[in-house]
Image 1 (cartoon, rainbow, N blue to C red):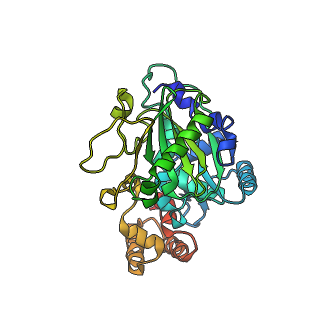
Image 2: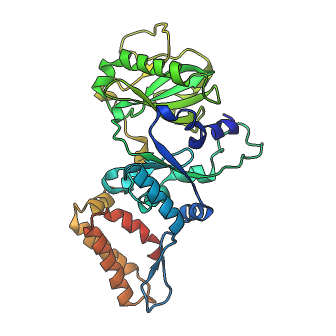
Image 3: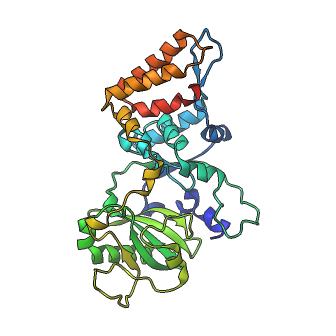
Length: 349
């Protein structure tokens, strides 16, 4: 994987080429002060003045207006991402565990909680084979995609080598979807037709990975394009298999032997027995915090508030302590997830 291939997989590079094949989206340049904010460990800063409890946070009025205009133009609900990645590892922190956003604050919450976003901003070329060459200049962008309700069982990842579709993997391989098993041939053929008619020889590279979605009518849509390399999850394949040059095998039932096949290898979860844990689980938080976020355990909230009180230093007044606890309680009973607010106060404890 070369740095040039990573650059070619930026959303703003491939979207104009395949605009008619994918979800309507808008692209906004990301100001440097917003990038700095996203990379800043702190979120809210409490004043050192003991006579005030004012909370200050950075403001981006011009950028905020542009984002709100874009969100409204896309129907009021969007799916956010940067040049390459979406904050899929941070959905646990959002209300209802959804990546749906209706405001800039929703987007910031996801982005600042995502390792995927941090990777985009700090190490986009870390796994490239030409590390000794100068890094290309990257103009970071906020991508807003019109919100669409996609069924995970309809998402597939396709691996293309030398402009040939060599493998298709169920995207959500942690779950068993009966319709995928029943419609295996139809799904595989629909994706092959879509690739040969619209994608093959039209992209800037001959090695790449594309994510597609097959809807209930059987129509295939392009969702994303990714570099052909270990920075991209190989799902039910391994990168050794994909780069070996050998023919790939599809799913095999127990007791069957591999047979010569034409076309790409199609792999999917074949039964509930083979269901695996989600790889994003490692980014999540303990169950106790989830209970706090959903309001399922009021006693845990009480214990947490007591702990916060003990952590206050002698220099802080009782008024400051009570104010902080009051804010925590207010956010607990608000319509937003309480855990999202806990993280906002981490720098003050």
